[in-house]
Length: 481
Ligand code: F0G
Image (cartoon, rainbow, N blue to C red; front, side, top):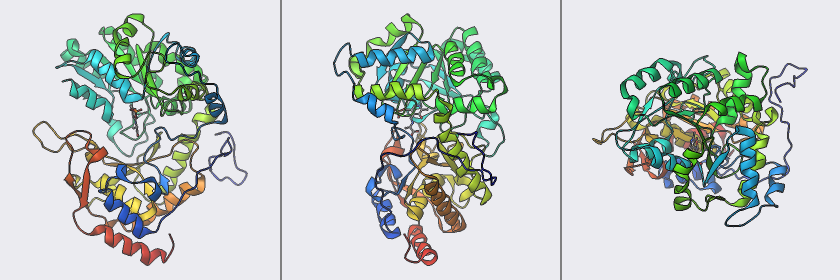
């Protein structure tokens, strides 16, 4: 994909696939978009698909599937126990990761539940480069504590650091000196989600594994976003230049004790699971699978999805497949930079991330700038993004607000789903919104759940700013959608 140069010098990502199944989309008028946003309590999770034009909420479970994946689904072996589909999946995982043991789970957070229930107890400390929402919720629910050891560049929103997801290795050593006995495992999150899909280097992953093993603890990789991270290792890291994606994957996997993943991302299907090399670890967690997920040979997944995942995992080893996401994200990010819109740099995986703090500096963090920007962009263009800022945090035990380190609006680019003209449309509406940014105001909760509030919480604007935005849209676009 990346090797095709245009004679005219254009820098455009060229698809190495063609579209064979499509889904009709509607773009509803701006007034209807504003109404839908209000009905959804200014929470993009609560919007209905019929009102959405570009669904950039997530890449989870919505990546396009290949013809080979769809074909594989037809031969799925539907049996409660001993399914041949499951054997095909475990064989593929062993071939890719070299791991002999696999526990299936219905999605990534279910794998996190099993890991947390096995290893976390009150007082446990779980170091990681950065938390993910569901990961942290499972750990804190059981009385554990998350320690984020991301390198300083990681939370700098504009940077030229190619591996912003890296651990600060000195902080990891120091934490082991202080808390050694309380650390059951260290979690490495590939393609670090909440800081903008930013990768870790191969070198950093291996160094973390060395430190952890020297201190007698376990190293666990969350490989949900590994595919993007593999692409960045291959294209940005000198030591990996001559390695294949398969070789890089194997070098990483050989040093991990446990690899878990959401197959809604890794494998372009829907499901998840936990891989390991060691039988004792497998036995320690095994009984939780039939208790919470399903029997050991499906773990709550449909056999069709497991077949699709088996093929999807193999396709993940193909640079033409895994480059599409990062190259589209780079295109979108570069276009927004050209237009002066504040975005997270360098472009990472998963999606393009707008920096809400610089986009609308007039909105205080207590009035949720990332959520306000998400609502405004939906009104402006029917584009659904995801708040990744203070609303996605949990309040402190004393009820005080936990202000997020970064206020981002994530615009996910599910792989092979959108065309370049749709990406250009999104860029256009974002630029319009940026030029009208003074109209955007903050939000406040009207109904705030105590945990994972970003999923169900209801909010309202602190002033009638959505109406002003609709009027400005009509002024500038006439009767256009
Ligand atoms: N770990 C990471 C790094 C994730 O990005 C996700 C999900 C999970 C674990 C949980 O997996 O959804 O299958 O239960 N991320 C989705 C997202 C929800 O939109 O970024 P899951």
